[in-house]
Length: 208
Length: 116
Image (cartoon, rainbow over all chains, first blue to last red; front, side):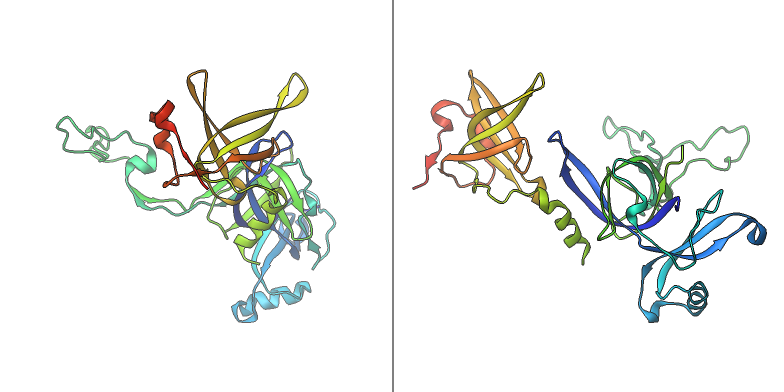
């Protein structure tokens, strides 16, 4: 089967475990995805399965994407198209619908998403700089101060400075699947996943 | 179906339908399941409800009592399977939603009028 699925983060809520403990869970709408292209070593240089996710209306579908989906025989307008690298072809067909039932309850998965954007932030928030004293006569409080030694007469590349923070690709590992709702294609994982509600996430199986 | 509706429907099977109406100021008996050495029994905890925090499945009540001259507060998630049932033994008449001021009071000062 496919090594992962595309999904949409719905939000977080609580559930009770069998021991009666309250657990935070994230609800992800995972799939259904449709196979749009099968890439092979001979033709494309590597093995992969390309899938599309999330239906949209006709007016939001670009013409090149329309042609690509038509070629694959998918009768849906799909917003997102991503591919999963595989070592051996799992035996899926073009246009095949794949749902959340590729995962099992109790399985451990990784979830990749884009973290929330924080805008332009200073060094204290962005890199956990200590900052200076708030009192005792200090007149600077949250400035980055020294940028390095005076010897090289320049600032090294990669020196941590204030700047744009967030919207990074973040992978959350070791998330346990609490529950699967195959009817509505919902997957409930223990704990939080990156990104705002409604954002695209990629759920991957742990291979080893 | 909106995102909020999906979240509500996910939590819905865990929500208890037959809960009594617990308000701040009420004296409440809580029947809690206790696990000791593989065995399970029910313990009753009685005190005054000093706070109710809403939030669907995450709703909690904070119950305060004086035990051996020591103030004890326990916060129960009301929909938890570890709480067997709630019993409201006395309705209190209070003018505040959170009765945290009771923490500084003992004996006669900590009395609450009964609602009639």
